Image (cartoon, rainbow, N blue to C red; front, side):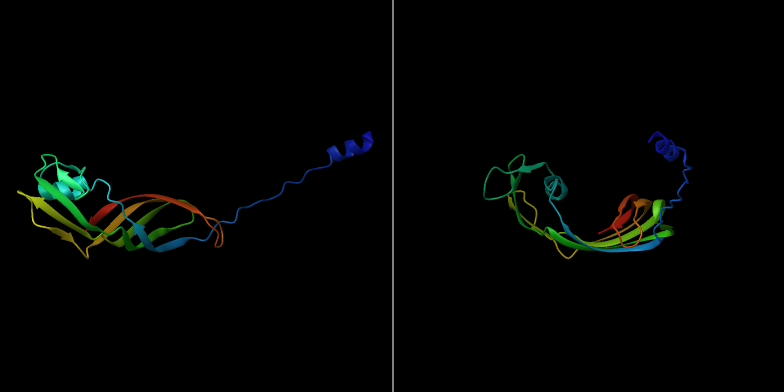
Length: 164
């Protein structure tokens, strides 16, 4: 019994070659987006910008906001949360595994906003309808894609310019 055990240990071990199959390079990514916008900091922008003074949430059920001095009451008639967008990213050196350069462009609809004002110093009603945002940016993309059509992960930091 001890002889068989000694032979098993002394047998040569052959190293196995293992090479990870690298996913093919990807040069373009296209996406169609359905977004749900939330009115974060809505009192600051655009309401404070429109009335020219500090705005706070109202304690009254008849309207949503009022100026801190109480002279202007603000009623948000419409804020469309559902919006759509389209974007395309180009990777000049290809995107596979690791870091690469990317250029991204997108077009998105902007939420429809309708606001009514009441009070002695109230501005005219405000409506933002049919607006689109255009953006172009350059950044660093980091990917960990799997070979074939498997899933992977991607993170990026992009800086650029845009216009509504």
